[in-house]
Amino acid sequence: MDGPSGGCPPAATAAPSRAKLPLGIVFSTALFCGEGAAAAVLCLSYGHSDDRFWLALTVFFVLCPSVLVQLTLIFVHRDLSRDRPLVLLMHLLQLGPIIRCMEALVVYFWSGKEEEPYVTITRKRRLRKGYEVEMEQEVGHSVRRLATHRNAFKRMAVIQAFLGSTPQLTLQLYISILEKYVPAARAVLMGICLVSVTYGALVCNILAIQVKYDDYKVQLRPLAFLCIVLWRSLEISTRVAVLVLFSTVFKHWIIPIALANLLVVFFLPWVQFWRSGTRLPDNIEKNFSRVGTVVVLCAFTLLYASINMFCWSAVQLKLADRDLIDKSQNWGRLAVYYMARLAENTALVILWYFFKTDVYENICTPLLVVQLLLGYCLGIYFMLLFFQYLHPCRQLFRHNVADFLHCVCCHRHLPGTPLHLQAPHEPGVRHSIV
Image (tube, rainbow, N blue to C red; front, side):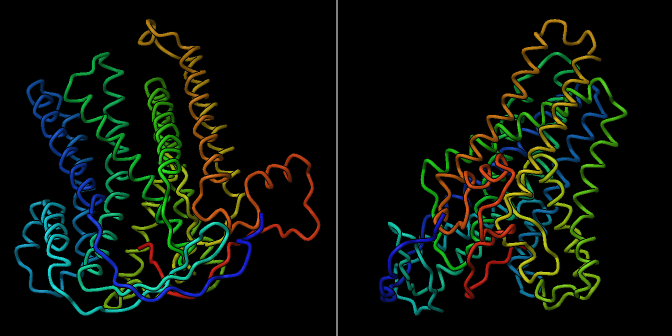
C-alpha cells in the first residue's frame, strides 16, 4: 500500500491551540473511584460472611494498583521536587486522581479567559484525502499543563486496567463460578472492571499510534473507536473466561501456566537488550541513579508482560531504544502472538471440557466452548478490520494486512518487498511511553 499521493501543501500559519475538555481524565477518575467503591461494598459482604481469603485478595487487587497509580502521577508531575504538601497528602490517602482531576478541570475552565503568551510552537502533519498537511500551533501554559495531566492519566488508566482491574475481574468471576451465585455488588464490580480493562487496552492502542507516528496528528474516527472497543472487549473477556474455567478444574496447574506466560514476556525484552550490548537509556529521569533506572524499567516491563498475558500490547519493547519501543510495523509478530494465544486458549478450554466437574451440570458446555473460541476469533476479525480499513495512519503502511495474508497464503514475497516493514518516521517532538 503506497503512502499519501500528490504533493504536500504548504504549512499552515501558526494558530493558538485551544484547550479541550479533559473527558478522558474525568472518565479515568470515575473508573478509579467506582472500582474502589464497588470493591469496598463487596469487601463488607465478605467480612459479614467471614470469607477472609476472598476479602484479602479483593483488598490486595485494589490497594496494589492504587499505590502504583499514585507513584505514577507523582512521577509524571515531578511533585517530589516541588512544595505541594496537600497534593502529596492526597496521594498518601490514595486520593491522588481526584485532586489531579480537579486541577485539570480548573485549568480548563480558566484557560482562554485571559490572553497568555505561548510557550512553544508545535509542528504536526495531518493526513487529509491523500495529502500531508503540515500544521503549526502555538502552545500556551494551559494547554501544556492539560497535556501533562492527560499523559499522566493515560498511564494511570493502563496501570489500573492490567495490574488491578484484570486480576480483580478474574478473581470475582472465579468466586462466582464456585459459589454459583452473583450478588449485585460483585456484578457491579465485574462490570466496572471490564469497562476499565477495555478502556486501558484502548489507551494502549492510542499511545502506540502516537509513539510510532510521532510527527502526525492522530485522531480516531468514531467507527475506528467502536472497532477497537469490540476487538478489545471480546479478546479480553474470552481470555479471562478461559483462564477462569481452566483454574476451576486444574487449580494447581493454573499458577505455573500464568507464571510461564508472565515470565517469558517479562524476560524477552531484557534478553534482547543484553544481546544487543548497548547501554541503558539515560532519558528516563535525570535524577535517577543506575539502580533507579533499572527499577523503573523492570516495573515498566512487568506492566508490559501483564498486558500481553490478556491481550496484545500494541507495541514491542526495545530497551536499547531511546523511546523504549520498536517502531516497526511487524505483522509477523502480531500473527505469531494471536496464533499462539488462540492455540493456548483452545487447549485450555478443551482440557476443561474433558475434565469438568459437576459444577457445570446445568450449562451446555459444548456450546460454551464454541462461544468462547468464536468470540476470540471474532475479536481477531475486528482487529484485522481496524488495521486494514480504520487505522488513522494506514496510508503510511508500506504493506497492509491483506498484503501480509496474501504473502502467507502464497508462501512467497513480492519482488523487491523487504521482510521487515517499517513505517516512515521523521525527527521531531518525541512522545515517551514511560
